[in-house]
Image 1 (cartoon, rainbow, N blue to C red):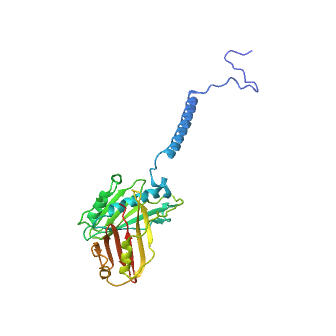
Image 2: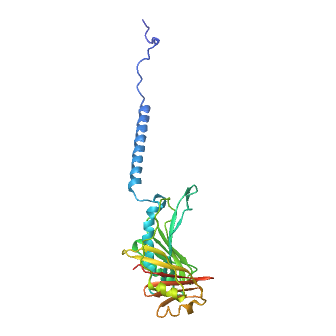
Image 3: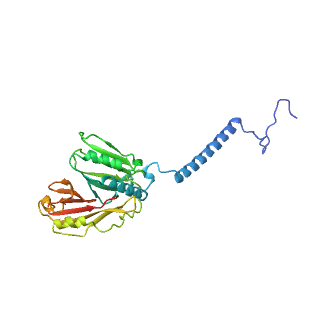
Length: 290
């Protein structure tokens, strides 16, 4: 028997009645469950976004994916830069394998230049014409004035491929650079498309310097399916005065630049550039992309 108000001692092995979880404990479990569910939802959304959303930074698209965009942009620049009163030259593709995505992560960058030759004091007008000739989606714009220190062109070809030029207003030679920026590395097949035979204007210029050679070719596919190319022959004899050597060749041609060390002219729709080095002469002829 027990007295009123007196609880008997707990017998060994008897835990007593089960305790009900407190309100606070139940709330904590709900919070844990909600948090776990939210983490699962976020992980699922991140995975879906990674597979379906377009890249938001260049580091999300590797160099192999960016190269076709660079090629299209280069052909667009070549087509826009070529025209009456200007001569052009397509340079070879350059691939830099030493750029850095981060201090500990190496990347690759592809760059291609289009060199433009213009008459004196025509750099700004040429950049304006190039900007106007590029696709509207590139949002090309020119900054600086004809009397300022520099004149610049900037455009965005998409997929983080940029077009840039920055030149003094009085320059007669400048380059428009098309660049992918530093990207994650990937296996590349950067070979240019197959080009046709060199234009007759190249052989005409070679004969002016009493030489000939097998040309190096830089080519790019044009938007209309054709191929534009620059054919370059190095190591031709150095004959002294370029103007005198080219006198017969340039008769009737549109001369764009005539310096002691460089001449540029148009033979029909072909751009011809002659550079005199200390011991030899280099000749290039560029077929158009339009």
